[in-house]
Amino acid sequence: MIQTFSYRTETSNNNYRHTIHSADIMSSVEKWLNRIEELHDKVYSFDKIQVENIRTQFLNNQFQIHFEKEPYFLTYKADNRIQVVYIDKVKKGNPDFVAKLTYLTTEEGGRNGYAASGYRPHVRFDGRKEMSSGEQLFVDKEKVFPGETVTAEIRILSPMLFEKYLFVGQRFEFGEGQKVVGYGEVIEIINTHLQQASR
Image 1 (spheres, helix red, strand yellow):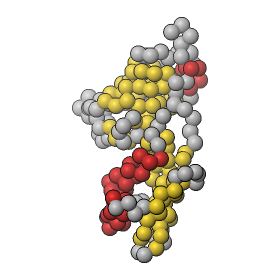
Image 2 (tube, rainbow, N blue to C red; image 1 turned 180 degrees about the vertical axis):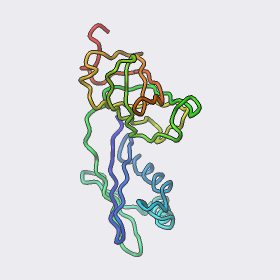
Image 3 (tube, helix red, strand yellow; image 1 turned 90 degrees about the vertical axis):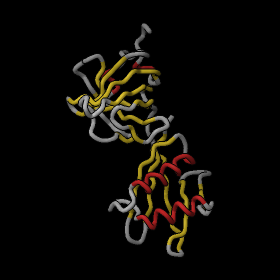
């Protein structure tokens, strides 16, 4: 199962927060490093010099990592001081199902940019009028671009709408309001309350 981690760094000038989706705490560190490199120089993230300092210390095994028990944290040096990065494991329920998702290309009417793991489009099955937000946590990817396919764990905001309705192989659409941005196929049902009794 994909887990969600909240990275929080309080510096003398700013507080930075980053949400990371990963299989475990150790693999989340590398994803956090990639995220801060991608976001360097944004007002809500580290600048390029800070990112280079953090990455260098990580590569040289200079991080102090404290993952034995919660609260988790890691430390590095910044301006001759110890800087702490707090890592909270976000408590979420299990996903409802796993699906293979195919994002439409922009030309087909899909998104203009990528979707990040944690994206919450509306989910609609078999053209029914009922729809619910469905959080997509991508397996082995952080981003999906228009036209790409990915496997994701899906957590539905209102699972009671689909109680005893889903089956493996069932197709669905996902989108932003009435705009369909992709299609999915259920490959595993985790929430047994959603599974059709006859299947």
